[in-house]
Length: 177
Image (cartoon, rainbow, N blue to C red; front, side, top):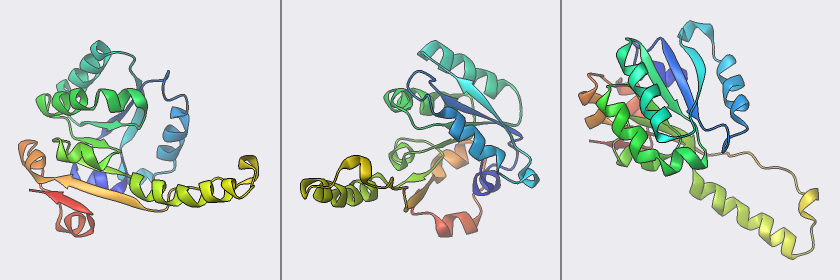
């Protein structure tokens, strides 16, 4: 969990990064990014591969049974398809969870932080234009997302017994009451 996430849920000591290794073979990139987080945040992030709904249910229930558990839902096709299940189970088992899509928060997720997909789509138009004008796709540089969004659901925070700091609310792109 990043520093802002830790501020929102200070009781989280360990977080499971949940993903499907069949649809997110790049999960190790996520894990490496957490290794770069300062140790002062004191959250241990571990991989939690899941391949079906039973494994999702088991993993989130396990997180809820032990104090200090948190959930990070990685961005992949599997987690998008099962987004409602992740949200429902995280609420049911009272597990603070961070998602990568802003739309998750409108559906009841506690928090999301990730690239703005609409900005990515807008920026891709210049690539299409360059290709239509004769550029070879292999010659075009890879673009990284440049705009990230933070969204917070205060209703879910209250249900989890969390007090979101004013500093986080001030920098959030969206706050759902």
